[in-house]
Length: 235
Image (cartoon, rainbow, N blue to C red; front, side, top):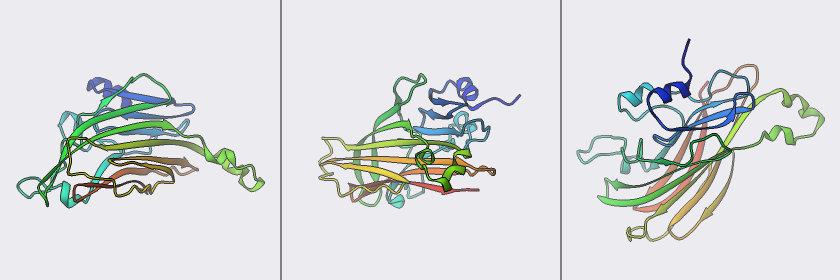
């Protein structure tokens, strides 16, 4: 019998949190890399996210699920030798997860440093992410034409990402902007921080559609430039 994602994570001694239930829609958040590693609509066996949990035992970064990205990529994903490299301090990072028991919200956070390979500047940041489910928007449409939408299986979640420039890093003088490219979102920006609510809604109708979510944090010249969320259909 094939093991579930939760059983495999337990066998690997990895901390994770579960939000929801199989009957109402469920998501599994992995502390390592702060990723939604599994997202299932009610009574569906297939997850919306591809997973590769063997990468954990192999100490590789790409375990699947959604992920956090820093841009411009060529400024922050180039190592000291000039080769392309995923910053280990970002992914898998050293995230700390709050109470991992089943609940309506789960948070992760970490403090870390990234280096701009073009300017050779070190940037100290603190990231806080909060995951929570979002209700089915199709149930809010009471028109006769949309009544058939109620038969669609649905699961959705919101990831609120807060990025803070730590006080000792004086090179980050101010926040230039924040952009949310998700389905819906609310933006809150301050002097040295960015708070972006990214929400993704996922639905199945006869043929299950699979989506891949990416949270992108943009850093330009040592300044926080923006945060966005994308969802790309990968049927």
